[in-house]
Image 1: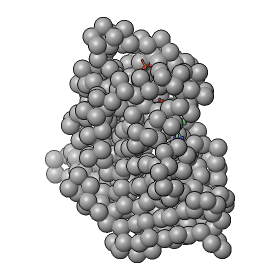
Image 2: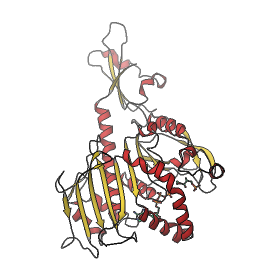
Image 3: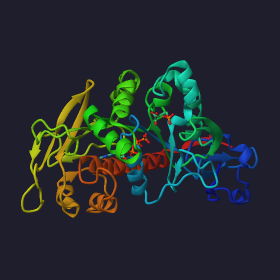
Image 4: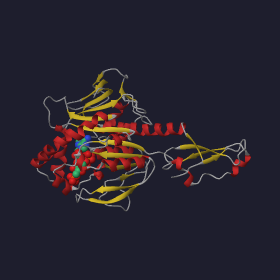
Length: 407
Ligand SMILES: Nc1ncnc2c1ncn2[C@@H]1O[C@H](COP(=O)(O)OP(=O)(O)OP(=O)(O)O)[C@@H](O)[C@H]1O
Ligand SMILES: O=C(CO)[C@H](O)[C@H](O)COP(=O)(O)O
């Protein structure tokens, strides 16, 4: 726990200047709040002295973000874009397990929920369950540890080693400003779900997932086409039962589908990407195109945006998703020249950028990341800016409504 500042009122009672600040052991009330008022009397009849203490993890409560997706669906790429929005590079814990799944930057700590597998690779094989099955995961521990971090306490989190398939000794996770829990099940357990300040689901359609798997596992890891097909098929029932239903709880869903601009296309190279944004989420105002709440179709290709076949089409409008009101922004097609993205960016509103062209700048900075020429990169970048904005609003709101406490 860090005490950042203590002010003692001397206006009505000069002896207040001699008052000692509450000791760390006295600061039980200081676990979660960012700013706390405290009062103390020097004697029974004296005017109370009033103090203001900033406390908690680095003076702030940890904001928790959940990112759910199947394996190989772009979580790591999204995390790299998000970390970059906060201006730092994410690295594994220094001097720790080289096979750690954790990534730490100045502002964010990203933990991978694979670390809560309760069964290792052999255990799953023996029991005949996949890693997607809740029985292979320890949700009690996941809940306890995410809650502890949110409350400003460090935890010893287990590590699932993807190289050996074993559970390694735990690593220490200190409460960051923003904790991202990414993996298969961030919204599966209600207790964990309720701890999330914002949640995202990456919904990659089967056709596209297959194309990406081939790209990575066949081209980069030497797997055969048959083994990739078999692995997708083996996971599908559990994916449908336990992973996919989480999207109904997400505040934002990035849905990735084959293009509709090329009839019958199933190559998975040109993509139609939909950003589904829930209405009424505190500190999250959905992005819109031209006019909030209208239904818009826009082909930006022409003098200001170079497009080769099959072109680019944006659509925007209100919709419902699992019975909830949402706004949907869709981009079908891909950019030829990323520097021209500024033209598209200037027509989008509520993107929570800090300066004109920030989205374009981020996209250019990471033009080598997968999806930088299409809606996946664009919408991941925008969601990154929205998370930064949500974080700043949350922290500001806590500072404005401090909780009164007595020392
Ligand atoms: N937007 C994208 N466009 C094209 N290909 C992509 C995109 N995002 C991811 N991929 C492909 O999927 C692979 C996996 O991406 P990434 O490592 O970000 O996913 P992941 O969900 O973190 O995977 P895992 O859970 O297996 O570690 C990439 O190597 C790339 O081949
Ligand atoms: O779905 C997964 C999440 O990344 C993995 O398959 C799961 O974590 C098991 O890992 P491994 O295949 O390395 O034993």
